[in-house]
Length: 113
Image (tube, rainbow, N blue to C red; front, side, top):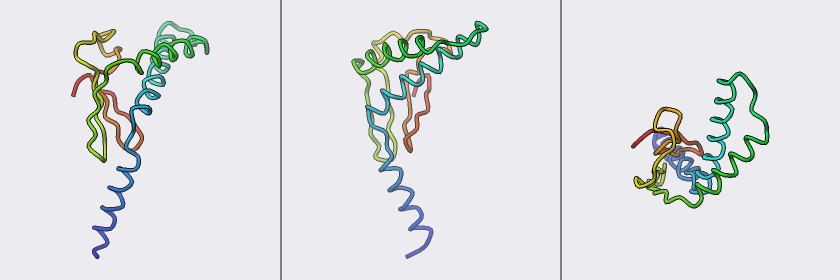
């Protein structure tokens, strides 16, 4: 067999094995929110307390697990979209992404897909 074909097959197998699940999406949403809390605190000239991050992450964790998030599984990657009927807080760049692409165990947040 061609070496290039074997490399391609290996990459596809790795991508399929690391395609993030809905649970991974929920965990990413909590980490994303904690990062946003840190950014907001830095803009205010202070450091976010661990309590702010924990409480904010817990609230988001509960909310995201209950939200109707549509997952499109393409075997090698997944696309997660928030239901369009949900009003997203902060429609500017600071709001939670309405769409996220999950590939190789990582997520890329986008305003829309």
